[in-house]
Image (cartoon, rainbow, N blue to C red; front, side, top):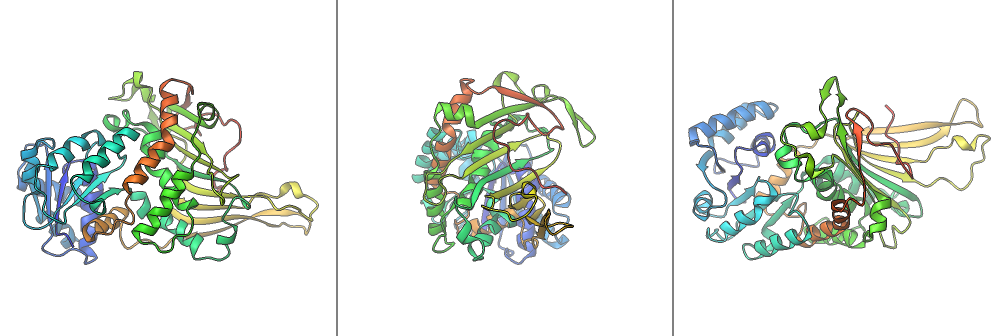
Length: 463
């Protein structure tokens, strides 16, 4: 197990909200000992004492559920280096030390090539690992170039392209529910499933993230970055094991089977929009174009929807719809699997029969099955819903991912060829949107998003 972690971007939001709490959770659970050392590297003119004070403050704010001694141990293990993350000398100083080091790039993706290039001159100890937050690159050619740079630095097994979605309890239960239950796996195909909605809609607006978000948008930030990963788990063939090779091979197969979108497909099967002024959860939200740090000329979308088809034996004829939006009226974060209707209903009011929908709810984590049962009269049908809440995980998602990095298990990280295939899927969309072949629609903040068109999505769960 690696006992040294260097975080470039060590004073950033990711470190404060997720990495420090993850380390505290690992310490509290007994996964980290006194030998663990954290190095934060960033531009601030701080020293180690100031950094430890900041780390303790962030741990108190974001990891209050962890025991105090675990938080104190993490803060005490930290040291700080002021560094230009593109300067080979500064980078070498940040990773210097005895034994292998896990190098975490908690940075904007645009900086990845320069940092990796600098790491080439840092003489990394054998056994070191590199961790990159997604999105991995900014397009297909950028992903290929990053893979080339990484291949000359460390073996592929030592590269962790992390996606915290894959460590969420409900996401893991997409596989568990399918593969451990005979009642589901035989009907997990296009013969029985009509469509799948993979949705991440949130009331959260920009919240000061213009420096990152305005250069990325909903398509890159959520659909290419996270929702395609959920598609892989929903649509994968059963792997022989959940080991890194078997699972990641099957995920790549799913992405390879996604039918390439033509320009005509992009026009018919994708949507983009951004929010106008409105009111969300009692707060007035300005138009996205008026948010601080936004350049309206970029025409960045805050809502994106893409409809995909898979050319495979299992999924030919099933529609997969991936959708994400910001500043909406309600949070909806789920995978909704809609089954086809039964061929015949021996009831007097067959029009009342609703399709069965299996929902994997991501936040809060849970599982719901929408069925149809008998109503007040024997010949009447009525909706029936079965729900279950997931047992809380023993570690937060970032805790699970950091533990995998430190112990060397890449099963939940994204392999290089998988990263490239994900960009292949969305590249025709990016190209068509850049040429304005798909109009940039608008929707009021606090609404349900742009008006629906064409085939309606699976409706949200009714509380």
